[in-house]
Amino acid sequence: MLRRIGFVIASLAGVYFVFIAGLLILMLQTPARFSLGMAKIPEPLFAAVPFRRLWTFARMGHLRIGEAAPDFHLDSLDGKSQVRLSSFRGEKLVVLVFGSYT
Image (cartoon, rainbow, N blue to C red; front, side):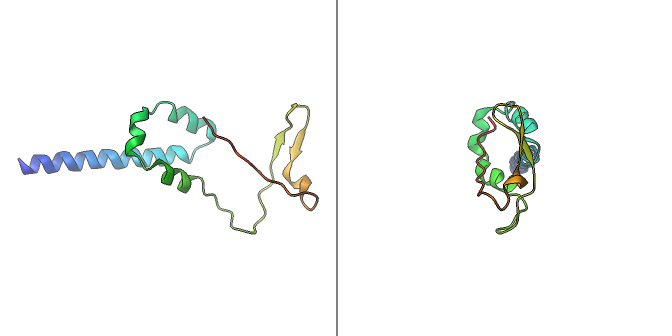
């Protein structure tokens, strides 16, 4: 009887850790893939998942304090032109604010 209980507990722990690993891998994907995957996960599961720690780890990036941000370009709000981050270097301070993916 104790062996069965141990087997069940070990099996549940294995499933839990596989789920956590899968969630971390999902968090490392592009925002579009991440949102598609997250939409399929039932909300009650988040009560049993260290979501904030996983998210912080997955999105911490590789830049260190004082390093220059990598250059990128985005469409302007009106969609008629593009804005390049490097065009502001030495001219203005830039603050990037990213909203939620959901």
